[in-house]
Length: 450
Image (cartoon, rainbow, N blue to C red; front, side, top):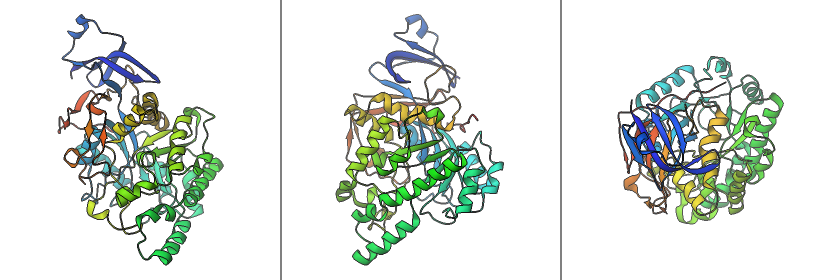
């Protein structure tokens, strides 16, 4: 266990930016010092990191990733995707249940936690997937280690579509755990598929994707989820909001700690809009679909206004060979965890957001919303999950730097003007100067305070 001094960084934390230093003792933050540290203080440390000119922020907590393990490891796996997370300053993630087998039994959930302990380079938790019939297992879940219950209230594979009203009422009414939902109305989508197939054939061009999975499909399902949460008092977190219309369902009138209904935006919907289909085609096909410029701008403003509470990635790799075809033939999902923080910092550098807001939505707010124990802030006694960002270094996104197993990104060719210089997980350096540092290190299971 080593002692590290991070000296002279611009610390972005809890709504402030200030020059200071952070002392790490083993796996915890020992002290935060505002201003310059004295020379005699440096002699107490095994390593002194000169961070002048760099930003120091808490580690990003990504509440929404698909690492595809087990069963879909031709696309991705925990070792590779957690390396990508480390390279992107993501020190903790929460992973989704639509794997093979699906994480809808206690045995499958325990298997995932074992895989995380053995394979993950950063900290982790896993959602339990709801079905029409497994809500009787909820009382067996350890809510101090399971981040939440995932409900697909729209188009899904296998038995993970929850479409029975009685089942939804039981799911929402029988747990005090966070319920995270994918909201798209299946009947509306199926009707649109029939319509556009009749007009344009079996696989309409990719530009029809946001017309098939349209705003009405999103709103119909999201409003139903909110209605159920209001009725039952459930803790509801609606994932990947993609439309301006849905924003009317959420409030900014009360602090996050008091909210029982919250919302997430993901990088794809904050960066792209429908005009990008012309150049990137199915590479940016995701569910819910990327929609109009007006929708994108409304989502950005909702973050600023605190109607949307957190930023996730919905990191969902596919083989590049699956990202061909049209609105129905190509796979939905893209890798994003490695570049989410640099993208958001780039938007902040361009004046779209503030750096402090980026840290709030990617670090503080996920910790508050999920009740994550001692993470998400730079505070004495907290786990030493932190990221050094160099705001004076260019990042050219190309295939040779991609850590995800799928080895592609829709961002290839883009140049960003900031880089992740170093990532600390529990006081341990896992990424530095463009490389995963210690491939033998393993992160910890997240703990949740209830």
